[in-house]
Every structure is written in structure tokens, then in C-alpha cells.
Image (cartoon, rainbow, N blue to C red; front, side, top):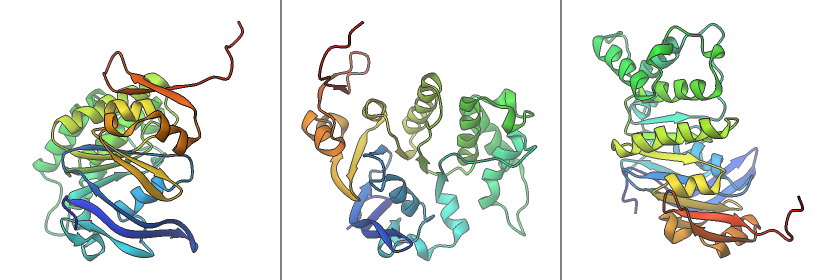
Length: 265
């Protein structure tokens, strides 16, 4: 029985009848920053797509507020849950302001057009992501970090409590990766529930309040990073011999790969 706003029960997920995830159940802790980790092709992004209703399960159910997510109208879901997919592409000649304003689509309708509330939501999203000074710039002109913040601002403008982010740091240099993760941490501290797919184990351990570890379409561990990240689990899931120490900066688990021999200089 689900105990949180967003959960999944006995999911089977497939592409063209190729089963990727089978009999998977998970609860997403309310108000937490959940990070899904695991090796390539283990089903991380597939699970996130199912949670956001982007992918329809072959079997099982995704629950939003205790009800099957498929029972809601799309606009209703978009008022409760925002999803940022991998590597989104903005149309040509679209400004940052226009892109972020698209996040207000779920709140529009025949009887409700653009309003001062929409303007305030867009302004707040731009300010929260630190790009208020970029509103007139074309999205295609932005740096990688600026562009990712613009997309995050768009989902923030939806004003949902649930935010799902699929590999939000992909293709960013290390400084921009931490810039985006610091933003995610601030959003979590403000009370949002975040779910993200990340590849970097140490970034996941530093920022997550809850880890979901996947292998071959199954969840093999869940919990706080300090309870989940062990050398034995990392070697079993990723095939990486390592030691786990305490991050001297953050106090979170840090994975240090073992090397077969010293590097000659």
C-alpha cells in the first residue's frame, strides 16, 4: 500500500514488447530528494518515464495521491507533477521568457487566459534559477548550464510540488553539474519533492536524501545514502571494486575506485 503522493506497484515496463522492468514497486518519500542510480540500461529513465505518465506500463500501476495516474486528465497531472526529460530541445528563435512561460500551459484554458498569477509564477521561476537577466536571450544562445537552468525554470513555472528530472547534469561540465545540483538542493529545502536520475555516484550520495539503486530492471536497495552506499553494493551493482570513505566536505559517502596498480608518472 502506497504511503506517499507518488508511488508504483508491481510495474512491468517494456519497449516494443522488450521487458525492461518487471514487478517493481517503489514509494517516493514526500518532501525528499530521491535519486535513482544504477548501471546503463538498468531501467532508471524507464522508471522515471512511468512515474511521470510518459510511458504506459504493460502491467502494474503508478499512483498519484492514491489513485492510478492514468485515471487523471493530462492537464490535472501537469498541475501536480512536472517532468524534465533528457536533453530537451527548444524550438528555433525561442526566448528564455517564452520557454519558461510554457510551464503555465496546465493553468490555461478557454475561460482562463494569461493572468498576473502566471506572470508572477514565471518571474519567480526565473529568479529561483538565477536567470532573470536572460529573459530576452534566445535559448539556443545560452551556455549549457544556463540552458539547463532555463528548462528547470520552465518546470518550476508549473508550480507543482513534484519535480522529476531525467539526467539533468548530462553533457554539462563539472562546474555546471554542481550548479544544477545546488539548485535542486535548494528546491528540496524549500519543500519540493524531487526525483532525479544521475550517473555520478558521489554526486548522488551528496545531494540525495533517498537513493533508489537499480540493477537489471529491479530495485536492489533503497534508503539514505549513508545506509545504502557500501563497497559491497557498488561492486555488486556496478562491477566496480572500491572503498567507501566519508566525503570530507559534505560528510556523505564517497566512492573511491580501487586501481590494480599505481599510475606511473
